[in-house]
Length: 538
Ligand code: N01
Image (cartoon, rainbow, N blue to C red):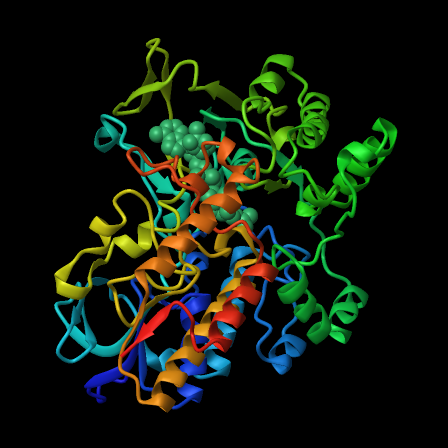
């Protein structure tokens, strides 16, 4: 908790958010002797892992890689128990980091920052919280996360439902008992795909309302053996360096060096099967052109479609679960445990709400356009997030001359390197739109951004500079580059949350930078080396 005896005064840095970005910011800034405070709506550290407590929640990046690399003793001391860590274990890790580096004392929890205003005269930010407090700081860093603003769809009658209501992204802290209950789930994204097999084990009956089927590959999760852990730990620094500097996703996979079209159909089948059996997102690296070449992509999509048919016994259900209208990997690939097989259970029903959309939520369930009625005791919204920009724009950010970031980004987010937006001096974003962020192992990207930002603030202190703002032209060129990079891939073909397509009215623009973590890092390093080229100091 924030030490209340300390007057905030004029802080060097105010940090919004105490997830993995916020924690590392506090750690680095305090070690550089800056005064810093962080603010978070949650009651504890952990960010998205604090909120996403639904049954089955775990990370789809392997735990030996989904962790901080900045402190070798930390990575040597911490032991992950499974190949893919559960949400409780990731949250325990975040708490461990906060305690180990004594970070919690600088976080004010249960506090939502609602406004941030830049003051020209003092070149500083004033943050306003939901408690009516104001905090002044020379720099403001938005460590608000890319997938932290959970989203309820606007369905008529939602407020009339008399049963229990849950959202996967804002799950209660106490375990929910679905035993003997009838349960409805809306959505079939990553969260639903993890939750559905667990809910099906508990519920008397589970009805899944699917609008768009998703591609999912098996996790093949297992306990980590001491040998596996030791193999990683022996070479941790070198492996981390490789992930940071030589991979597009900030994660080490088994990368292929050839196109799917260079392999014979038999070779391809064997390779996809081998990766399917091994489990995890490694599947998507079977060939080096699966996200850029439609024909190659189709070979992988076809393999997964045949798997769905093989696993799901009822042919009609299998067909409904099979994605056909977007390339595989253009939406975030899901990684599951028994997702498709769950539809073989007698207590699970799949309802196609693309053909027959939900008309309204009712007192005891929902009704579709064709007047089909479904009743349940509990309704689970697995309807995702206002990704990348949602959490940022929930704060009313006012830059130079009182201009609003919401207005500036009305037609889509614009930021130089995904780090700062012109007209909003001294305001940084961690994993902001236009950076690799959600297309990478996000902890790798967080570390790179936090290091860039803190080094930049330190550079300003050393040079006696009070203000930094991206040059409008540099920003324009970067936004164009982000768009061109996306256009060279198949990613814009899907109506994904990467494109803002899950939020009615949100501009359709590829928000993350697809150029890769390795390339992006080199660009940022060059920018810094050239005296922060593209930024204007005063
Ligand atoms: O959210 P989503 P998510 N009526 O947006 C449906 C990360 N994550 O929480 O596709 C009916 O993917 C929507 O349908 P459609 C991961 O990066 C990671 O599942 O819009 N349905 C879709 O099926 C992931 O990609 C992990 O047609 C509606 C679903 O709800 C990201 O978070 C685990 C609807 C939303 O899927 C988001 O995943 C979990 C409506 N009005 C999440 N509105 C791991 O690390 C939405 N839907 C493993």
